[in-house]
Length: 425
Image 1 (cartoon, rainbow, N blue to C red):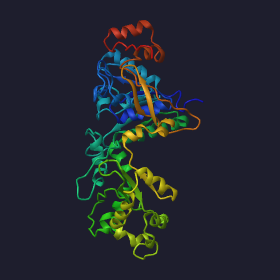
Image 2: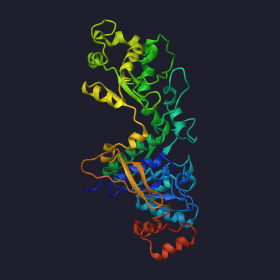
Image 3: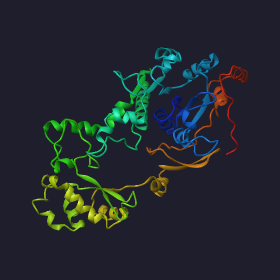
């Protein structure tokens, strides 16, 4: 079986998280991703949050699997020559520089497409065209400007950002879809094109149910929100709703045996209407099945706090896993709050390749997330991230076809770092 993107070559000008997320996903699917880095420094995340002295950080290694690294000084004439040759030989160029940075390097869209009319140039920016298009954006800024923070947290508390990297990694995933779509379009058009994703747009796309609720407010209060049952008026914008379910079925995070001493002894519980009678039986409230005060979803809405307090009395007699086992027998939607430690040790996630162990020549074995997308006929593996400039000479010779003399000439110009040598692994 061949890999899905085998034969596709990616020129990777990305750094930090959003762009590398995109190019790593393409690399997992078999694309040849050539990561271009600054001589002597490389991607800034190589040296951020370092936990093993003298080794690339986990921040870098977990975002740059399956890639090759070349160092090039884009300000050096010989370095520019190398970049131009790479543009000629690649199918896709991906970048997440600050606004205008690529143009200042001398590589405008017009220049790039004149070098290679079939190339796809994919970019991540903070904002799309508008008043903020020249602003830099980072993860939490994207969450705040894309609508996530204003709708996350509890009603009586401040806006909150989520631990899920929906601004950076979420945007990278959107860009990857744009790239493969453009590649498919090229199969019948023969032409490359520009693909762009703004981080604000990506976050807003992931917050679409909150935009749904914004429009529903015009018709009246949001009855599935806790504040409706508490008699608290709604304002003119979608409010923060704590752990309420966003799907129209009331849901909460409830304590289980061991809480609150154990910060993760909790379970998410949804009072889905079709299984209401089963819920009543499980928690020991059989009369609620026929009581007009509880029998219908509409009747239950003003009493959600009381209902969940009663359900929590039951969940606190069980561990989160015991509760899940019991509830799943009755198709009652629920899910334990799993810590990162529990996920890291989950054998089923390791068996599917969602959690993988990776060997690295300078940091040893580390744990990483594998490809979350599984294809039945196209394998996907996870190989370690490259050392800085590890593949510089290999790329010059094998990809660009430079002779030994030309490689030496470019090195003499100071445009490249000497390639890193790796001991036998």
